[in-house]
Image (cartoon, rainbow, N blue to C red; front, side, top):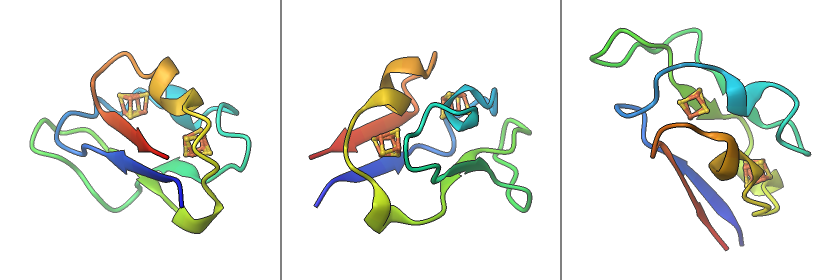
Length: 69
Ligand code: SF4
Ligand code: SF4
């Protein structure tokens, strides 16, 4: 079962991974969470839909996303 892990403390909240990159549209910037740097980090809305494509990992400018297949 593919899984994506967002390192919330590393995320800079740029939103690149949330902007039409994910083919199953499960990444959003959390409206409720702020990390210690003051950014709203990406969260996964429905992990079971992840297909492990890695597109989010590839577009992220930070080492904030890990994908497990
Ligand atoms: S690995 Fe692919 S399907 Fe899974 S969250 Fe990232 S972009 Fe979406
Ligand atoms: S692309 Fe990376 S740094 Fe930007 S919002 Fe997504 S996880 Fe955070």
